[in-house]
Length: 124
Image (cartoon, rainbow, N blue to C red; front, side, top):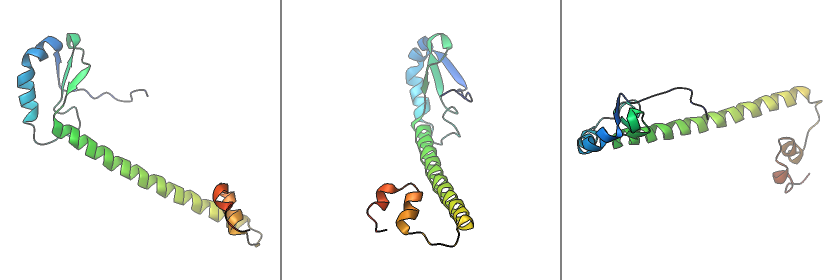
């Protein structure tokens, strides 16, 4: 998937410098007790020739990011269900508008919705 935005840590270190400063960096990141708004807020980017490749991120930021992801996934699930209900509502409205007044069996209606496997066990 192509990147639509670039978020980078405010600090970036070459690998050799990060190697010598690792104990200090770890202590600094462990001391972070309030998560940032993004993973990049407290992160330190490390890579060859100061070009990045690896991020050191405090656990509190990772936990907050996981919580945000779970919350967003729950919201997406809710919106998908709502969209399905709206689509079904529009389908039913259209069906009623086009109906000549005859009734349709429940099994036929379920088949029209694309649930042939469910309709197979129903009478009619």
